[in-house]
Length: 115
Image (cartoon, rainbow, N blue to C red):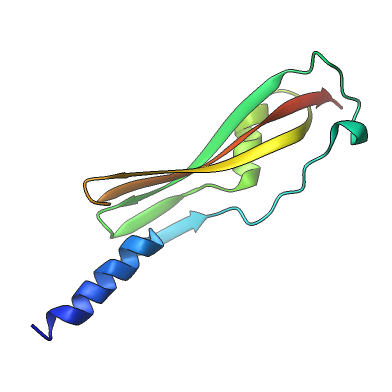
């Protein structure tokens, strides 16, 4: 029974950290400064866009992905040329089969002003 305790602690730590035990290559957001409508040439008809970027983890062994603000911003803008302002950022976490597969996404939405 004493030999199972370290294994249980390691499994609990890996589950809470949402990372892989064998391989981890993830990027997570830390901070993002967004422009306000007063700082850009905003218009009432500026389109609202949404983008997301995700990390994934499988079987507590491998983790990969880029859930950074930069990746979510690039996904939101697509081929548009403009400045994203009035941004809202959320983190969405999905776990399946007791965490054997997890997906953590950064979701950005905001308006696009012409640059």
